[in-house]
Image (tube, rainbow, N blue to C red; front, side, top):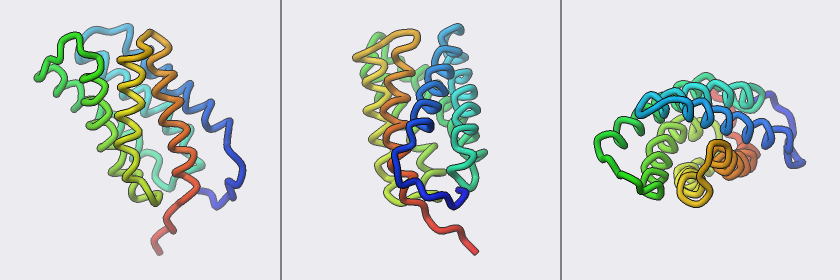
Length: 160
């Protein structure tokens, strides 16, 4: 957080977030199984890290949380084997990855509790309603990016 006043909607941030999420999702599309989710999480977290550098105090924690959240979600999906239920996969991914990211976000902004629900809606929408190589990540990126742009307007004061 650089102390800037974000009084207007930051369309550049939203665009960067959508592209970051989409590219991360597409990278995973080139792989199979658990490796695809882990690769998506690493790439997505890294690209989102760059989008958050000027908006968060500790953006590297976002990279760590996203990577770990996606890895855990991949393992849970492997164990539960929801089969062809993209809806259930979206809920599981949204809950687990959203929770991991919430652990970071709650230190940065007020109202962070909404983040898990936003992730459930984002990934369920992307996976179940608009699935595709690009569209899943774009939908999830648009939903989470819009929510995050709004949440980042309510930063918590830095601890002294």
